[in-house]
Length: 323
Image (cartoon, rainbow, N blue to C red; front, side, top):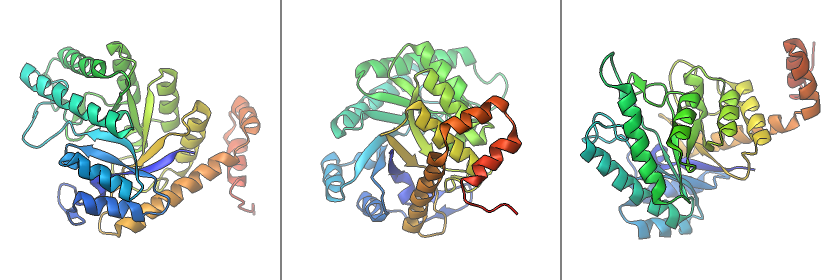
């Protein structure tokens, strides 16, 4: 069974374009909250925000018995790398990014997750003829290849997203990101599959997982949901219940087990602990439904591809009486 983590950025103040939700909290307060969430196994730490005092950080993790699923390297930062981090056209900026990413990789090796996840949201474009797309990919490939060579035992995971804050992000889909990773030739460069980003981008999450696994680039998974129109970071399964069941069933068949899921969920005005307690419960319930699926039965249904048969079978797993 995969362990469950919470991204520390979602344990304090979170913002949208108009409002700020929850108070700003210290690292001590954030990890204390995470420890109060039922069956939460750990956290995804944010770099550089959570690493002002690495010794104190380790002490907090030990005190609260929290594991670390990954280190989230923030590649979009106010006041830095305005026109992209990994793909910047300025060599000195790319050098800053590589050097800082290497420091984060060293911390990942020391703490144990040996995994960096990063969402290059500010790498991309807003309008036609803004940039040479081939050059952007070349810059990103060179930057990330150098970082990957720093320590082949630490995996770097690119989290794709169609847009935000760029009108079109450089890594906008599972296929684009897998192709880019393969082009770099670095075996430790892969993908964070955020199911909410896949759904917002119009992708089938289970299909995306299968493609990434076949490319040997399914390195990490984030959980959240949305309505398909925006990346709302809602509770798992709140809109796409059957898509989540198929996703979990597919991940199990692909061998993504005994690893981590991290919650990328915004609490808004509600109680933070209550929200993540619900995230844990919903995730385990959706996994339970996926576990009830008989693979032989499903294989037979997949041969006929008849939705009437398949969906009646799936709903029968919920013990809902037919009228």
